Length: 535
Image 1 (spheres, rainbow, N blue to C red):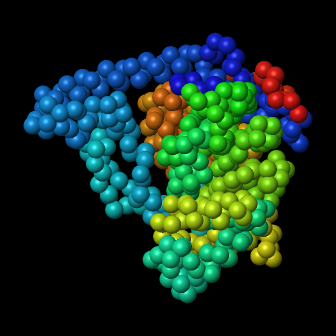
Image 2: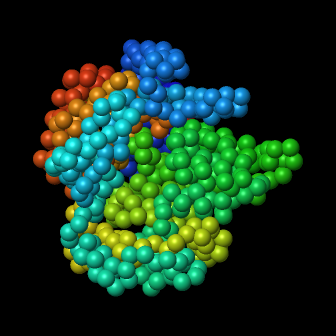
Image 3: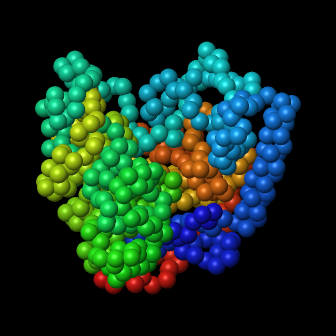
């Protein structure tokens, strides 16, 4: 999948439609215009990107040849001579990529931070003398780096203030560790208070919390579906959702990203044909989507997904890891953003690691569902309970968002995040960058494409005291490398302007301003093919 079509409007030959908008397929289901922009990769850029990877691959094989004959020192793990007759363990493409491509830009990842990862942070300076195979700390600290990469959407990643004070007080009362599972000796009153609050925040009957966000998906989906069930998964779903679906033993079918025609076709085929060979009806059909897709910056077409789910009597699993707290007038996620009824979503999942500045995840829904998971979820039965100060951080930050602390701090942060997001995205587009996603999404992917520009962008931004996240294969398709910015309510306009100035300067230096789109397209943009879905 080198050029994922997903929910994007296909325009024929690559680069033929340099500017396009992904508009609503069924506007009657939406209370406001819903437009997402995915500008096509310019043809010349695509060709040069392929050429760049081709040249790197050729030199990679040359370096492997030199390592094989001990002309160049080999730092990577490889088979010993006595294992030469066994099946090779280190000859796959991913390992080739790691040795020869990723290693040259590895200094852009895993940078040690020695402060709170808030709007600004301090980085431990490190150097390498062998092309990123190993690093040495210099003992110096890079101060006040503007943090444009953390999922700190509402600015609750802080070591002072109401949340920090409450967490310290809870630590003094309960300690840090629990040392047991919820079903044994690890069920504290603070956990039950948190779950009642989460259920009220989401507008559902009941909720259950877990100590790890990834495991919330990967360990609970197998408890919900199994053999004889069908999972319909968006092609860009997170790895935790993919793992959970595979562990469940269910049949998995993938639909194009945010594409309702693709989803409806799979639903129709599932109803008409049933299970393979026997053609019996599926025991369950579960649609799995995310609220905000963390690599694309797109928002799920939830009104259309719910309409399809109701029509075909399927179940809906919504992962709001990035959208809870970051979208909607009340910060209640994508359901709140579209003004929908939470009861229309069967399983509401989210994490506390982003907007709440904590850790762990939750599942919300009907009381019968949560009672079932308490007895059958691996995360509930075998995982240690959430740390008490983490639970307190969640409770305090959630009450602030809901306005139950007696202040307007939560509403102010939600408003600030929305303003910062729209401002940052608009300025980047005006500069001529290709930006993916929805205008209301605080996840902002800026397309880099070429492999050499991945490392160069991260390094040049750090020289200007801006901390960024650059992403390449295998987290993205091999020619769709990008920088991913995460906007926060903690960012001031001055910080954003400083970051934007640096981005523009680096964009000119590396020639990253690929966009050929015209400004100010119509609100509904270029319409896609008519949906099969009727209101």
